[in-house]
Length: 309
Image (cartoon, rainbow, N blue to C red; front, side, top):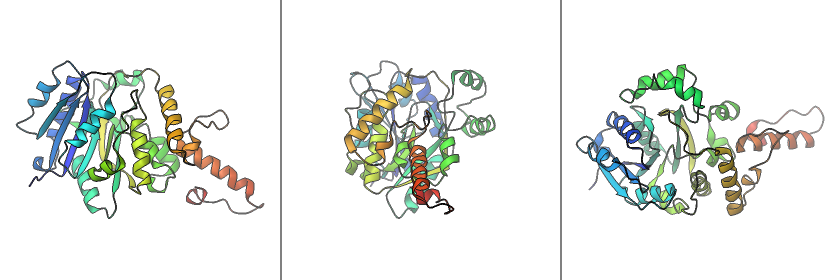
């Protein structure tokens, strides 16, 4: 009987050096190596990614799968990785995301302690920082010491791009009306059985973004508990963006997700408030607060966030 508890699923495409950095960080995990495996699915790349992965076979339990290059198929790659995974829990990370040394231990402990199926959002330092910041960070990041690099990024204020949402809405994302909106597969985990029952990633998403949030909606509909834990920490190795217009791609995916599910929460995608663009959960919060104020008698106390949503 397999002792594997966690399967780390990593899609990749012609980024063997970034893959090497990611694998070095996995070598340094405090979690017993017998308890996790690393599943790399190559989305049709032509570099030496397989050889890089095989070079870690003495220290990591590794699996490799290559699929034909038919364009951007990260969703299909993750589906393949999930299908061949042996663990009870799947941790999705991107090539170039390096985990802190205790991060897999944190994922496992959280899932095993939970009384409900749980989705865990990891914290990703340095994610989606601007190009100027990337240049400044390159001299200080170290794939051999992810913990020290994370401390440096924290001090440099190179935080997870979702930090402003946590500041505005609170870190208890269980209370958010639409926590699925931050189900980003750069670093997230869930029960493998729940992923399978939810139908895995929609492979018809063949451009950047959307397939992860789409799956997040279905996990949310299945009453999975959504958590964010800063102890599940990682950092995004600085590199140039693969997609030039993330906002346009994200907006298109959001429209598609609402058309697919037609939920009251997804109906807030794309709404601008006073010519400002906010995250989905903040738009919902502001809209509900405005509606509550409009219907509240004069001098009545304002509702709390939980009451507003």
